Amino acid sequence: MLRRIRSLMIAPSLAPTLAHDHAGRAPIGLDRRDMWIACLALGLGVAASVIAEILIRAIAFVTNLAYFGRLSFAEATPRDNHLGVWAIAVPMIGGVLVGLMARYGSRAIRGHGIPEAMEQILTNESRIPMRIMFLKPLSAALAIGTGGPFGAEGPIIATGGALGSALGQVVAVTARERKTLLAAGAAAGMTAIFGTPIAAVLLAIELLLSEYSARTVVPVALGCGVAGAVRAIAHGTGAVFVMPELANPSALTMIVAVIAGGLIGIAATWVTRAVYAVEDAFEHLPIHWMWWPALGGIAVGAIGLLVPRVLGVGYDNITSAVGGHFTTTALAILLVAKFVAWALALGSGTSGGTLAPLMTFGAAAGWLLAAVAVMIVPDAGIDPRVAALVGMVAMFAGASRALLTSMVFAVEATQEIHAIVPIVGGVTLAYVASAMLMRTTIMTEKLSRRGVATDVEIVVDVAAPANFG
Image (cartoon, rainbow, N blue to C red; front, side, top):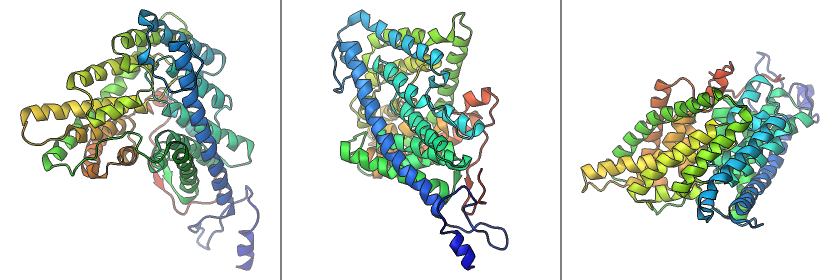
């Protein structure tokens, strides 16, 4: 027994990390090796926060330069430009630059990043090429800064994951530990953008780790905690999507919101199929794929000329949708225009995130469905803001199947606890509807087409064997 206790006091190494009992089972607990990985994850949390700030500033710099001809890192939005018809050329130029980077740098920078991280976990022991750590944020800054209708969170998640993978290739770790570091970096990146550390931990579990065990979740949670602290210091602790304080929703409001969530879950499968249909259409073009993002950019520029709000990150669109600051007509126009621009741009293979656009679609659809209910029963006191909030995360849950992530994200991102019951009901219905109608998700369809097995269940592994290599 004393020898076994002494063995646990040895400095971290790649030797088995847990003593086993006489039945061959690993006891529940963590050892010094696990704490070493956790310390690395703490550093990743800080680094991912810094990278997130750099990317946000880089997007602002590109936007200022491309649309306003000034050298500035100040926050700017493409919709305020006065270029007129020449604004159509700006996303096209961004597409050309991204296409060149993808062809001569790395093709892996195309898309929103999470499927690529999942592929490296499933097929390459979580080894992401180190150049992705530099090329992904640069390509995203160019694509989004020139008007691409994407969120910044996807590239940050991908870059944070690449950073964790790179660290795991420099330091002597096992494949499982490298996966943990990748997930910690990715989740810290999401936290740095949205200030949602709990949802980020759940995202890592549901989409990247596919397991729940102390030695994997603890490092991820610590990385997210540090990233959340850094974000709070830099930006405060307020909600990222600010809503007027909601009263306890009425029973009819909750029913409408839950039904809206289920319908939006069905719509999420259509959204996924539409994106891949556009991608398939680009595959049939008689030109090199390097030029596809430029064609998508022309479409984005033309749509943005008519509906400027589709351009750029558009987090304020989500805030306005869940806060009830749009007219019904304006919200319907934004929903259609943003979806078409996003589907064409993403299907063309440019670089950008999907979370913010999906949430924009969901919030808009939830509000519009509730508006129909208000027209039918105008005196019932239905609050469309609740349906918009449920719709925001129901679309994400339906498209990604990240059920728990979506539920918690809604509360963390808006700090509206009173809507928790319709959130749980609506998101669950969206998940069920999506799972019944489509085997893959917006995250896994691409991998399935490449022959990568993606039918992975989450394993609760509190007493895993020690050898992870």
